[in-house]
Figure 1: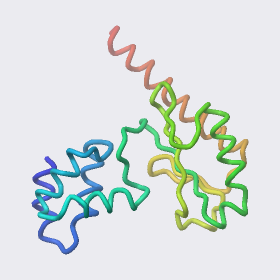
Figure 2: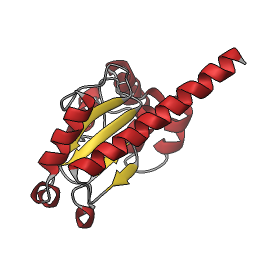
Figure 3: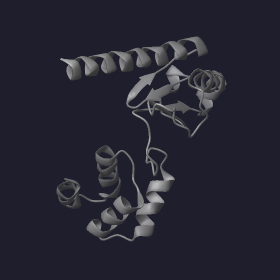
Figure 4: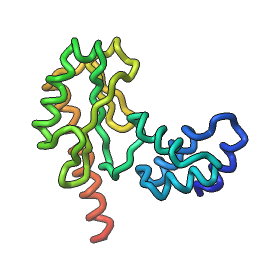
Length: 162
């Protein structure tokens, strides 16, 4: 599947970042063997692939949970209380930045800026953006995701039993 996507992107200028995004969609992260494959297929040095993967914070080299929480730590978010948001998430989930919950449901991360300064403070959970947060509101958001997980698990149990 990735090989087919690479063939499509090869025709465009500067395909590396697009290919890496696609690879991460497929595999969930970019382990060394995937980076090597991309380098070989695009005929670029492995050091270039590794450099791009480690430079941009949206690429991951380790497996992550189903939901990746990114807390914006840019200037506007910092001024509006990003530290208290990060602390609330950490306390609610019992993890620190870079860690994953035991149930592999959440991974906590930070980023410099999402470009949503008017909504500060901001977090992203996967592709969903949540703004104008308070510690209480962010805990509510996390609880909603947990409810979603419980619902999915119950439906899965019904299908197995059914």
